[in-house]
Image (cartoon, rainbow, N blue to C red; front, side):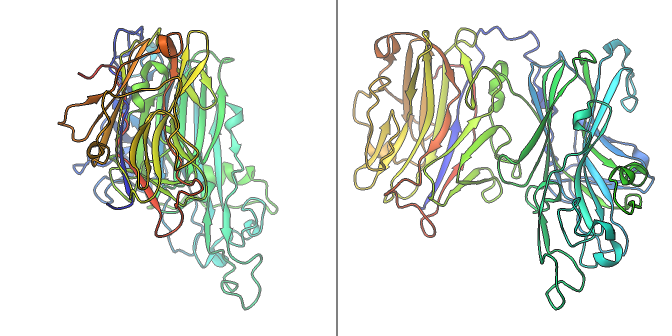
Length: 565
């Protein structure tokens, strides 16, 4: 067996009789698009104006939507077929847009460009909305959050760049005559306008001296982070969270590193309640905004003289995805990782020192451990009543049965490992009860089902409260199956159980049903969506650098209500 852990996580939750809104059957995820169709299908999205689009293709660069302008000097926007009414889908919901950085172009000229997120929200009555999607309704406010790159990108920036940018505060002391900004424009909210001052790093000499490599051209070798990110895997990310009719969040992220988000809250209560999102999606700024408005706002000495955006460049859209983020539709946190390129923190808080990405093993979220820290976890980013980091599901509103299934292939059993769920069951008196259902391996002793995680890689801890038992000893042939599947069931407010099996077609080996009235003297009032967790860098675990890098490959995570027979 190799050292790769392939994990398939199915947390299944099917709608029972819960008091969800009447519009709950509308699924905002159907508006998502990953631009991977080989037949150029991008529905429900379209781009305008057509006269300024020379090329729109999902096949030129598979997995990316390529947009090339026709040089007409008009902004290009991606929009949905229909606007989104605020009362159309349960709130809150989340929209994420992924863009790849524009490629380098070698020209002795300024290579100015700006592209990013476009948002237009309206406060008008839907009866007043125009049929033409390119015309804004009355009482509409807009916001565009743009990655702006000005100057000359390349080794000859000394000739084609902007001298007053070199070593400036605007480009964080970069010797190249160029700068990268995240800039907000529009009339939606003042706190998202202007330069967000997100720093980025550059590599090179500071400053270059005569005779040093690169000194003749006075350029920096590389830039990464913030609006300068161009690592080639996951460059630029934007986020809109619609929380209520008067409140939303705007965010910008970068790179494949998890948690690299900068967020700002927008409160529009002083304007009124939003009735619809008229436009949401990508925008490419191709008019004269850069030279006519941005240049004087940057307030340099001497003043900047910027050329209009270079025409005929290639712009890349990676994904435009929606999902609900509240307890009403927490099944939206289901994810299959079947589209390589989605960031691992798309729907989850990813913690610990494992490297997390979706490229190296298509179809899986890959977590690779060095072993220098003690744990890794991924927790669903649900919005609701919270304890630190997690949202509660109240069983009075979201009726059981609720099931959670997990499957994984373990690493080499000569090394200790564990995989479990961080699970808190809260009773009617508000007291939390820890339950860590999972599997632990101790070399020489084999694999064991556990109800409580241990900080000692060679010790099985006993859970004195939530202590699920099986009628018979679980055979090693089942626990070592590739994969082994584990099912966690909240049957009702006082009964829980665990199931184990190997192949999908195998029957479940169910545990005894645990009565929480006996275990902790009461009912389950609420629980937190559990986090898959592993302690992989514990003292004595043997995990470290090559050849003991270990990996988890997360296959999928699903949520639904129901009870498996």
